[in-house]
Image 1 (cartoon, rainbow, N blue to C red):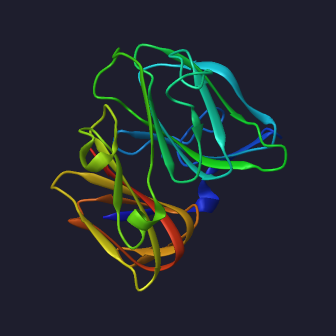
Image 2 (cartoon, rainbow, N blue to C red):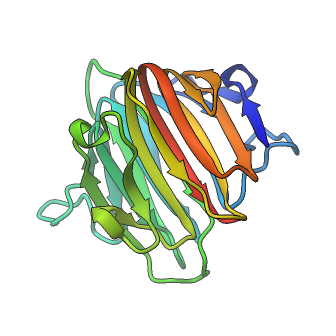
Image 3 (cartoon, rainbow, N blue to C red):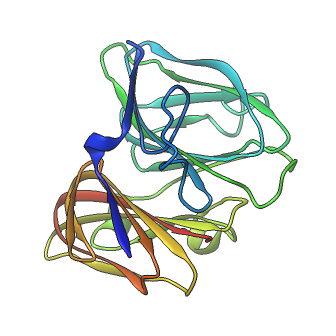
Length: 240
């Protein structure tokens, strides 16, 4: 079964400095039919105005993944990441994937320091396997070449293939598709898949989706991506 979640159906919040589309219920946007999918809880498509950002705030018991599309996002947290002299600069750019395990509690901020460029990124929350773990942080860069016409694993529970490690039964893949490029991801019985089109247009199991659209797959043996038009896609392989 495949169910579509159209971009125009998402929740939207305009805070002036922040414009955000919500794929699932979040903050003041509540839709009982869209509370998450499997252990995927949040996909927010955020645009942060120049010189603004999220002040210091707290999270706990959530795996938080950030995926920058354009601009830069500066991250600082109570673990020391982003501080002067830290091994982790906390600045994420297009192609970077950042994972923060909130665990038993962490404070952080996210800021767009540019004077003339909006930061466009996806904020993704996944429910962890275990509550109260030690907070953690990781960021890695994934070149466009490794995603061209393929699904590159960027986050997984076991950090395989050089992906960032998430403490959740989920795997995230990123891909770029144009023209005749295509890819397939086999799904184990009982697994769910969520396909989010970041930009462009692509066919998901034969159904055409545009930027901001998503497809929820249950009981399907595979995810097939084809007929892309300058498409960037994130595919989630999720626990039921």
